Length: 302
Image 1 (cartoon, helix red, strand yellow):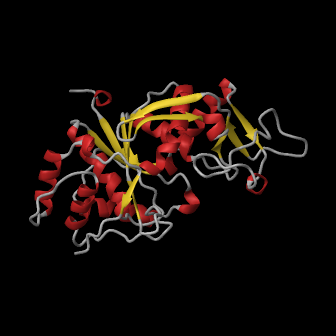
Image 2 (tube, rainbow, N blue to C red):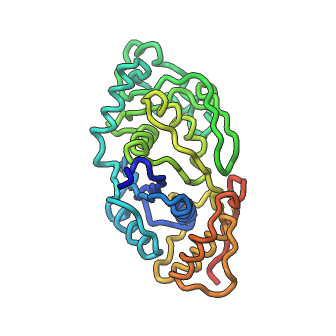
Image 3 (tube, rainbow, N blue to C red):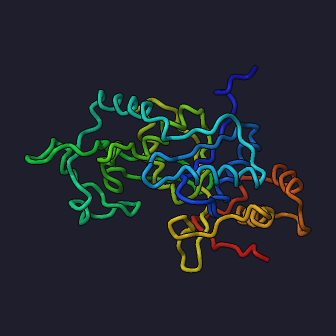
């Protein structure tokens, strides 16, 4: 029997803050077909680490939608909300290395800081050398320095100066919840994920995740960031902007539109669901994905 760790592995990791929409489908389809093309496993992980924003009924709806669209996954679904102890272990490793520190700053105090590459305030280092008088620890931050370079399989060479473009970032929040950046790094390593195929809106997080992987002695997957779908105003489709949920009654039009979005050329005739999947598995090629960060949302309603 071949050990699971030697088998290629991809994943789809939605957050249960609302139903799946067309933007979610692009990531699901691209990651699934890439895993299939590599003869690998495809996992589903529910990223509910931010529990105040997540709802269990949305997790159930996401899994039901994936099944209705014809996706099948390997093994049990992982839920981040059940892995707090594992994230704490990783934080303790970083504490022993001396690369994290307690921070007493509030969001209001950071509101005027210059913005980083992801649009969030870049931490000015207020607590980097110790808590100032009168401040108490609220969160734990990772001390960053240096440059991270990697080659994205879709978007090409990437370069990020962590201190200048991001700043020291939070790993354990003031509300006691672990941040996405730490959780996703630990989860990918524990699940044996070696290819991360996801939306280009997450490409600016990748350098932080690679930095964490190196500190924790974890393997770095290959990354492929797919273009994201944007509306007429140029805004990314998201649950926060109330993107229309996928129609589980008739999945094929959305699947065909997502395939075209990713550079594939589906047959012009109407396909049944089984016919679509047979064609898609045979036709997928990551090299055909457009090398852009975003594309307009296609009209697949007709």
